[in-house]
Image (cartoon, rainbow, N blue to C red):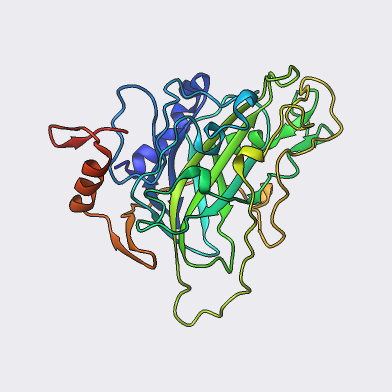
Length: 320
């Protein structure tokens, strides 16, 4: 599992990964690291990862032609792992991308969906059954050029610029009052550098499994969080103002595509976004009943390998 030194090295390697687009490197919850998924050929992925697998082996994107297909949900052929990262409502999840190219500007978005009626949480959830609530749209996505905020581009400073400045990471707050249980967190960047042409927008959705634990003993119960019911295959259209847009022009503003952010959601503002720093490697959990979990073990990994026919070579698990 990646160490603290590995996490710190991400800053130095960002430039080398920029041309390859990106994927979910890992997430951090209270400084504890849980692994994402690297789709590139020949990469060994950890069996206890919480990031969904996908077959975008070029670290590529989902285009507008697939907005109505399951590919937009959790990327191309996205499939869930067995493991879940334990969190509590109100925690901030630090989503660490594996680099991002300067100039590939656009919004940074976050959604969450409960995994309902499954025996293993999100481990076998059908992605087409997931219904989503928008937690963050990175507004204001575009800060116009003005004294003290001149970014050398016609439009100005974008949410992706904020993310790059924080070592290609973004914080997402898990809603206070969210009911305990299994959830999929969906993080997405929409790159708009070719979006002046219809079909030119590039979506990079990544998904990860979370287990929301009950509130700590003695903590007051917050107001229950109300979930929405959006289908990811209806999020966007190729003619949306925030999808078909010329970012090389002097824009006065930007219209964020997709559903509105849930009224109770609390997005982390731009000026509170900060770099991720790993203090420890985390042990994810597996869901054994609808309301119970156990810590990840080698046995749980073996069960996952048998269930999904993951190849095991020399005792090491290879990616889906």
